[in-house]
Structure formats: structure tokens, C-alpha cells
Length: 290
Image 1 (cartoon, one colour):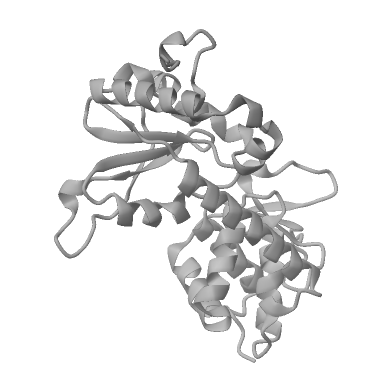
Image 2 (image 1 turned 45 degrees about the horizontal axis):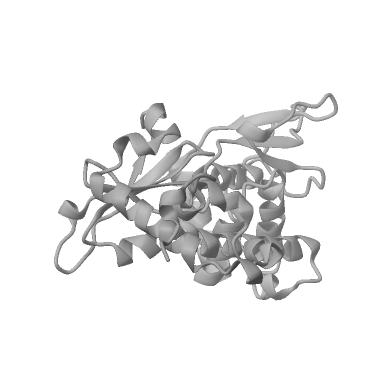
């Protein structure tokens, strides 16, 4: 079986790390996988791959930082594509986007399993604890992706941009962008993840008749706007929210109210960014005159 990477090893007498710290990006994790094989650490059963921003130092572990290297990351990516195929790589990526503390190590164990048994359909082996963990994690990420696509609420701004704020449990912006890119090609829009401090932006002027524009990453937004987006609402947006809140208030039948079922289908953690949930208790103007 061909090895993944080069054959250089640690110098004799050098302390073998038990933790490899990677920059918190998918390319950073791929580079760490490269370094595992480059340094011949793959048979160290206590080895962990941990993102730098979630590492807690320990007196009983030796940590080494790994700088992201695009060439090394691409070599690992090419190898994994050959071993796991597009569907398997999607699971690896979605698992990584869960940002679980131990996900870097879990994914490495799966990579090692795939390399050790290249002819085996390893992602179907749910008897393997790491494969089972990944399957459960991907299911959770998929559920969050679906909810984000359903519950994102865009608000029209004075700059003619439809803007939405979100705080998903997982880092799902990279996998929900295409959903909105295909559906809102005739608008400027942006979705910003408050928990992770970045967003995606679609500029319709960069699209062509045959292809929608590529998504752009945005990071520097005014804190005042993020905390109070009503300050940049267009007049149309203000009217729309009043109409929508009025509809939501009057369509309810008090006698059939079921808060438990309502929260099951629309979890409460999403409510603070839903315009229909921003109704003040004294909003008498929303009540239908009978």
C-alpha cells in the first residue's frame, strides 16, 4: 500500500508530540494530517489533532503547532478524494464544520482507517466508534443547515442589501450559501454569523446571464449595525415588518395554542432574529379591528 506522504521521521531523542495544534481551518487540519504521516506519528494511539483556538494546555501532553501549508493540504485532499469519493469528503467537511472539540482527532482516526483499508467502505462501518461519531455529527449539522435555510430572515436596508443575522450551533455558512445563491440571484444580500464573526455576501452586479456571482466573505461590519439593524432598515422594511407582525398576531387561534409543538418545529433559540417574534406586549396597532 502506498503511503500518504513523505518518509522523513523525527530525529532520535526528540520528544514526540502527543498533540498537534492546527490553525482553525479545514486547510489547517489537512496540513496537520500531512504532518502526522510526515513525522511518522500515525501509530501513536494517544495522538490528538486539536484546533489552536480550542486547545487547553496540559502538564501530561506535549503540543506542537503546525503552520498551514496549501501544498500539503492539497496533497491530503487529493488522497482523501481518491479514498472516500465526493460523498465521503462531504461527510468529512460537514463533520469538521461541527467545530466539536475532539473533531480533529475523530476525523484523523477515520482518515487512518481509510488509508489502512483502502478497499473497504469504511464510512458504512458504524461498528467503528469514530465512524459512528461522524455519522451522528453529520446528521446534527444537516439538521442545523436545514433549519438555517428555513429560518433566515432577511431585512431590507437603506443600501438596498437584504441583510440577515444568524447564530447557528455549527459553522454552517459555508454549506448554506449555495442554497441562497441559487434562489436570490436578482438581489444584493448578506448573511452574518454573529457567533463566529464573519459572513457571506452576494453581489448581483458580478453575475452573468448564465452564472450567478460567486459568494464573498465579509468580516468588518459596524458593531452598532450588528446589534441594532433597525437603524439601517429601509422604509419598505419597516412597513413589511409591521404587516408581517400583524398577520402573525391575528392568524393565531388562542384556543388552539400549543407552545410545546411550536417550539418543537421552531426552536426558541432562533426567535430573536425572526421579525414575527419581535412584537411588543402593548402592540395594540397589530390587533385586527372587528
